[in-house]
Length: 339
Ligand code: ADP
Ligand code: MG
Image (cartoon, rainbow, N blue to C red):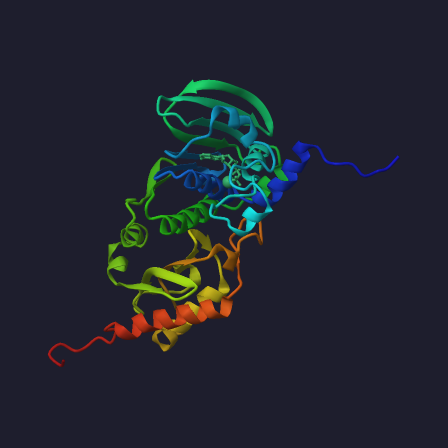
């Protein structure tokens, strides 16, 4: 008798959950990304106790068809990728088909969804990976998913959770980045019944920046727009007086996806060159567009890190274009009357 056997789906989901669902912010990320992939233009995120007791994401997107509802919670079940060729041309935020089954294996999930304007939809309740209920329901078009008691059945993971403020900090930070990546979407973020963020939607990036960093900050930002053979760049960069003590004020978005890239941050800082005080970093929101074949997002399940096949060229492009805007701006304060 051999000793090797294939793990059953529930155990496989729990293992995947260990990677995909690190903390409440990971759940928020996956659910909001699903809403974005469903073409929602209104997304409401309601959080309680840093996401440990409740995470609810409501969108007005496409919804899930009734016959797809059970499948959506199966492992590697996705509507976004069909074959291996699609992996080189990913245009959605999700594609692994791991989020819903992973989340449902470590929490109590209630999904209400409809693809239909007339309001016929499904409600599905799953707890710890076990389907408790799937029924017809009347609802509005879109998806409303509630995740309660995260990690209730994995106490070891629960023990690692930090304070409510820290967990919520991770959530709000990620929502800010998503809002910058999708200024066309009106985001509402509520924590313990308090409104934390409301972005206007409608597509104006500067207005979204104002909603996050305040109007004063938005007023002192410079517009960048450029393209070359491989890359397109659009965004707003803070004047050098608008600095921060850490790198978190630099948001880089690649093909609609917020990414953390040391290379991109380095290029930005180099563009400011001597304009920045030592150990200060600028406030920057950059949206980069390039052919999907030039960027590999399939590096890590959370997909925050990416690889660029033309990294050096991209860095040079950013440094040159931002440098041009900064040099062109009237940055040296002149004394009144001494033009
Ligand atoms: P992935 O996003 O990688 O495809 P998920 O497990 O996150 O995998 O979701 C599985 C599938 O469920 C998605 O491919 C999509 O078809 C559907 N889905 C999930 N959330 C939503 C939503 N908010 N609106 C519409 N469809 C959704
Ligand atoms: Mg997904």
